[in-house]
Length: 336
Length: 250
Image (cartoon, rainbow over all chains, first blue to last red; front, side, top):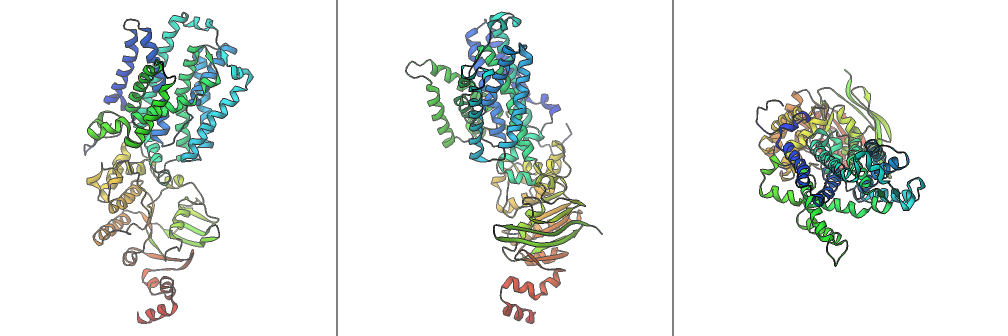
């Protein structure tokens, strides 16, 4: 980093990320996710944290579109579902190994997202938001009738596929650690983009797209790139998640309520922040787990999610982090 | 001398309204060209046609020797043209410095982040926003936002600067200050096209003036000549008799 005569903080370039405290905060979070369930071989904690990694991955990547570029993507779950389908299909029908199937799923979904993105990102505001629901529903309808992928009945994986990972018991640990890695990558990606020139361009688009374009931000390419980048890690998460379940069907893979939950999480934590979204995801997952055990209501978390969203939009538009920054502005220097 | 910007017979209609019609003019490097005309004469539309916000229906825009007609605004910005908006367009939740950094990052020099920050700070200090670098743009006064428009455009280190009424809404002291800034920008080698309603200011700043009326060029020439032109006076006052009388009096 260059010496700065005026002593004002500088935006980091990729090379110096590791010198900043926030880099190590993310590293610490990852370490806790790895160590906590290993401590005492706690399988129940592992399963709860596994869901948290999925929520954090979905919400962090959604945040790149929603919080940075200001585009409301209601259908972000389509990346997760498609990733799952491609992986499960490649493993069951083509006998690919997990690593290859997962990576190909991620890349394929990213490329698809770029192509879709070029098309639907011409729309703005509510029209874009609606079109994202359209994309999800269209893909869901297509998959439901697509015979190679089992149509509405879905696809199963044989339990033998867990053998290369050292049997079912060990495989669950491997999948968990892989999901923690995906979550870690999501957090670093969100952070890396935020402090990069790409991120600055996205924030400019989010504030005023026309002005950004006049200032020279390549708006079309940046938006499509953001949409595509934000598809990659959710697709990996979907691949691993559905490999773990050994079963995938359209109604689980393309469940809009999960999309909505990701949106609530991003708003709850503070859209545009990295920390807020991760913390929001964790607390939401815990709350959800607690509510799911309620005997009176099934899926009661969705009622809570809806209410939360209303309260946040009305009273706390900046979310948790917005509220914290207002009280302690200095936090901005450490937390992103 | 080849022109930095050459506008050749551009036209643009919105529905049935011809906003700009068959307009041609050129700007040489280092010049300040003033564009005046009554409200609705097509001045801001002209800027939008030059920097690619709208594509003209007819005609060509040649900048630095290449045809940029109908090019997307961000490519025009990258080619070295920056502009300010008549209605200010701050990136509201970003700070003054961040606003200018966007201009520097994506402008002509396509700077990396840390060098862009330096260019941005320089530009912000230059227009007198040095003490408000970390203030969110939304919290600036209208005069501050006008300065921010200018600082953001300057951060891009453009060769051609389009100024759309940067003096409107400023008090006399602020106008004085802004005129000084515009002079210094030109001394720095930047070519300027400015739209302005404040006659005294534009007459003293411009080397040449183009007068628009109903989307067409009414006349073009040195400030003093344009000010004496009866057709110009008539266009502004809308009354040939009064114009003749004033002209006789002047």
